[in-house]
Image 1 (cartoon, rainbow, N blue to C red):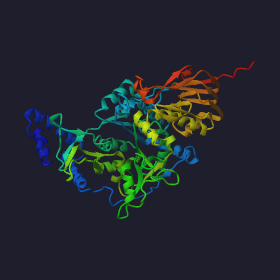
Image 2 (cartoon, helix red, strand yellow):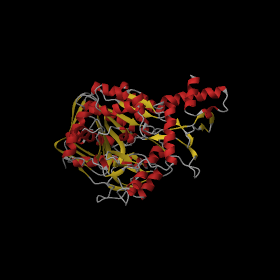
Image 3 (cartoon, rainbow, N blue to C red):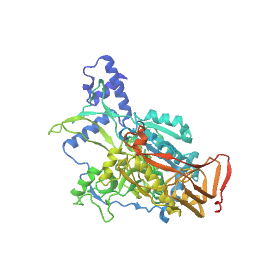
Image 4 (cartoon, rainbow, N blue to C red):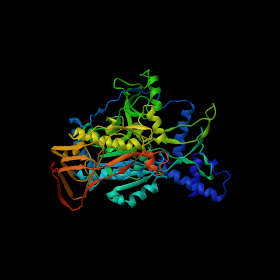
Length: 587
């Protein structure tokens, strides 16, 4: 096997890696070569060949977007809570039992100020649900509510990295997979790729160990190659599944937009449907555009924000990426959440072996563009999959307002403050939670509830419109249609601004007034009907914390919850339970 690995190096023109190594070092390096060769579609030779081609184009100053003319793409812009939205939700919920979910979770929370995997962050301090638990709860709820889940369950695939694999597996184990069956959860670890030391695509030695090749992450586009090499995409298709859905690790609102997005995919026969949001000009998120080639063919794809403005200026939009009459860019923001038709997806993986369009971004150290300031590598992005689809594949987008679909936790407190000052979305742990409150309150108002208006508050230098602390689990509702069904016809639900309300389980509401804190939990098998209930107590408060806060997550959020008084109703015995507390008579 050592001879075979050495032959791979020779064919790839990388014999320099063996120079100066003793026998033990040579064996270590060749073992790594075997691993790198197996991990990349086509092997290490293909990787080097692709690197030489892309580096030559980079050296020549070629733009990968040359020859493409951008225009405003065609997609669906949905108003949350409209009749059209409700109809699409119902369609999507009928389809979701034939779906598989894929979570891209390769990141640590260190950059955010959290010493662990991002999936261990809490979605909300009111309940302590981690992002991973929250997502598992959604899959359980969708699975339970689906007309007929294929095989009785919905698969959940998680792509991890070297940094996140072990702690992700440990979190699942210690929590008994948050109620999912172990056999429906698949963890695929992303491997790194070899680094390149110059424009000739010579592989770089690890500066800390000459017996190893330096490696770096290849990008989240690796999820496609992993689904191919693992055989999961093919297996899901053979099981009769029709959809595969990709989402990111810290966007707690994603599943709120999913049912209608899936409904549009099914209704329109889309091979790929990107969930999108309105995008401010030059905001640091990719813009979705229709790209037309010189031969008249076209594709709809995401263009990175740093490429979009110059592309527009060089072609059909001389002013570049500017706002239209809506105040937003006409090119929707790509939130890297995708719904793909599994038949087209699986056949494309078979044809490409899971390898999608790559790019290289070297930092040159000389005017001849031959030497690098530091090593580079090939990279790929999950959302570039349209470049690999057949020419006749239908690709579109579904755009929601951000309040009901997109509030990721992706910036540290200091970065978030600067974004806030610059007029952009902070996208921090602070807004990740307060936006969740806002979504729940806004949707309840749409459903007919009376919820007092928000108050302006500041946490960690970020001003937010703080709504009542209203949170419900996916076991209460996974859709707007489901929320309306939880409120009985003519229901009266009133929530004051200072209140906190947590609903978890099969709970219907006829008449409920909350001025304080109320938690209602119904265990599986319990059906709770709140016929009449009036709660008034000291409640909970969000208290700002300062820079000296010891708990990392509390410091990231910028607040802690002070629980002064709580009314808690917990039901565990199977069957129907009725809560009927007539208001006290006034003296």
